[in-house]
Amino acid sequence: MDKPERGPRREAGSLIGRIHQIAGRVFSRLLRESGLEDISAGQGRIIYELWKGDGVSAKDLSAKTGLEKSTLSVMLDRLEGEGKIVRKRDFNDRRLMLVFLSAESRERRNSFSDVSLKMDSIYFAGFTEKESASLEKYLERVLRNLENAEKPQSEEREVL
Image (tube, rainbow, N blue to C red; front, top):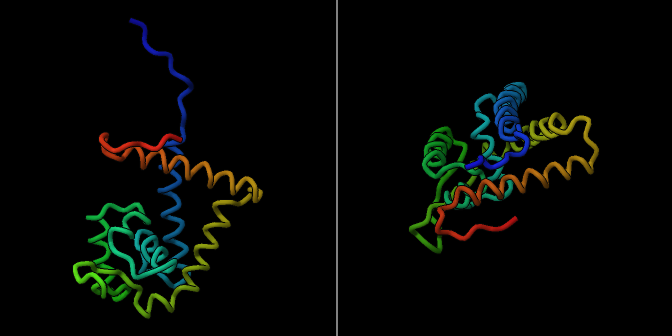
């Protein structure tokens, strides 16, 4: 039996992995240079999502950050211990715990935003606006493909 013919080997997975590693190191350096050395790159993802809108459940935060619930739980414990977030029971559903930014974290938003803008300028140096928008669209498609592949086989997958 003949082997199925394969197309050219793609490097996207390797490139994305390398980008993730290097971007984390650059982001951590920029945080240190901006006086935000007490925030790790991973914590920065959580805090960034909370700046976009806090008072969310851990489940929602997990979906927004892409972090596993167990990993997120450990990180939230640490952030709460460091005074960067506050967890409160939902007024309407006492079983649900919601995550909020602390006053200190709210005050640091401008510094963090400056770091995020620097990262954007690094990511998209030499890109036109159209190229930047296209790249983000393609990356969103890759993300959806991976999210669909992560779902259990019993769930219906979205066709792209």
